[in-house]
Amino acid sequence: GRRERTWSEHEIKVILGQLFAPKRDDEQVQSAIARYRVGRKVQFCLLNGLRHSEMNLIPKTGINWEARQVRVKQGKTGNYKIIGPLGPTSMAILREFYDASKTDLVFSRSGNISPKFYRILREACARAGVPYGRKNPNGLVLHDARHTATTQTAHKRTYNGRRQVFMDDAD
Image (tube, rainbow, N blue to C red):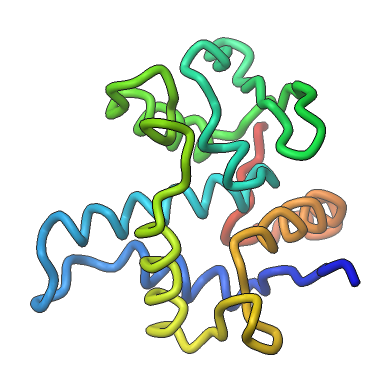
């Protein structure tokens, strides 16, 4: 059947904690940077409910900086949707990747997903003690972030002053 798993608040905290951790002694500088970038992409997916492929295909021309909106080509239908207004964290992530990108795309060179991305996410989950992968019973996958974002958006106003780790209010 359809998968409806979401990331728990604890899972978000410990996985992002691993991805954003300082460089480890046994780690190359480039690996630490790659791990941080995966963390920022995961954070963007959690905040905005995008599929990884949708995020990877965002063109630089698809960003409206003033309105804090992004035009996204939907993975399943091929239709375009506008997301936003985006909050400050999402805008900062967009700016970071936009400025670093040497192609027309914000989050990737070619629009393809790097296999290294999933290896880094799997390792972060392992270090955080969170089951990972479709073949693992109750294993977490990045696509679940999409359900997490939509669930959290639906419940956002019920939390009032208590902000979630990954919430990014546009206010």
